[in-house]
Length: 437
Ligand code: HSE
Image 1 (spheres, rainbow, N blue to C red):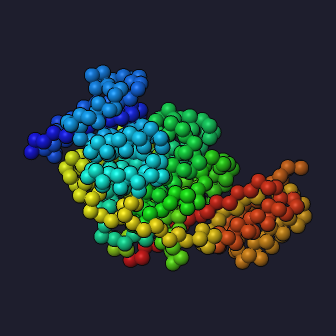
Image 2 (image 1 turned 180 degrees about the horizontal axis):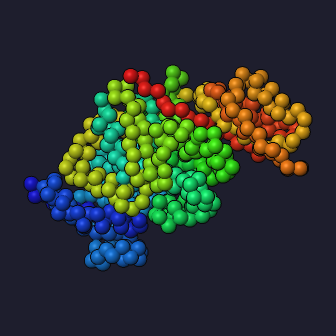
């Protein structure tokens, strides 16, 4: 008992400052629980305005990363700069200096994780990244430790707090997309550039990491079909609600006979789906294991304090040696496992919500249903609102299960029909995954 573990945080933004505050305020508590004295040695950045706003002590501020990396009393670097360039250099330098690294940078790990993990091993240190996926939820620990006894069958997640917050604000409070996004930024949920939050890429970064650990295979980011919430129309969100569905940005990875099916897309969930009530900044991940069945992990997926919770849990686990043992011994890490065999997404089977804008002329609906029938697509619901003189009128169809490829071909044929506008919407409906127990 009584060892000391020195930490420097590089990047004084929302997460860096919250991590510093947590390390400073809970240090005695951590010592009581672990016998290790975590000591915050430095906050590294080139601008400390936000650190001052967070009332962090000036004596910790240091603009010189090199001096911190040379300091033998610093054992671990927390990287909270974000992005793919400076952060990568910082992490590489830290690893080469023999420092452990803890990062919340999912984009960097999704692109360069294998290289960085290999570099860490070469230098006999570890990388902790619990904070990179789903904020404060200990999902990575669950996958690499708690669920190690399982062969996982599927993972479904709501893993972007910003998108989920925006969708909730739009549906429950009638806010516009722009108002809701602004609010998400003010709450410290969004990335510095919120494009990645709303175009689905942030969720795809997380799915690459989570899928990789859940299935023990490496998943190239470019192989994941991705759509964001940025093109959504409130009409479809509300119409879906009327039909008993909730729209969520879902990250999905599941085993099929033809390989691993992966996707990040807005999807409709039936009201009683386990993920349907995950609202606001909250995230949740459902994992289906062959032995345990369905387990679900829920919590705040973004924001300073929840993310700092995950960062500091990594720091503690590395200081204790627990994480370092998993990092050095398991074979499920992206630098150690084989590339995933991915299923052809065109072959995936789902139910669908389709919305077309049509001119109210005789025979157009018959033509649409004929195209669907030709592809063997069976209709479940059909809703047409009354038309107003000269205006396009929406028709909404939900289908029974159909092949993605058939839906896609039928959809393209329909939007090419006379009297059908080319602005149309196609959204998957995802039912609860069956347990195999
Ligand atoms: N911008 C991310 C989100 C933060 O909204 O989920 C956590 O990764």
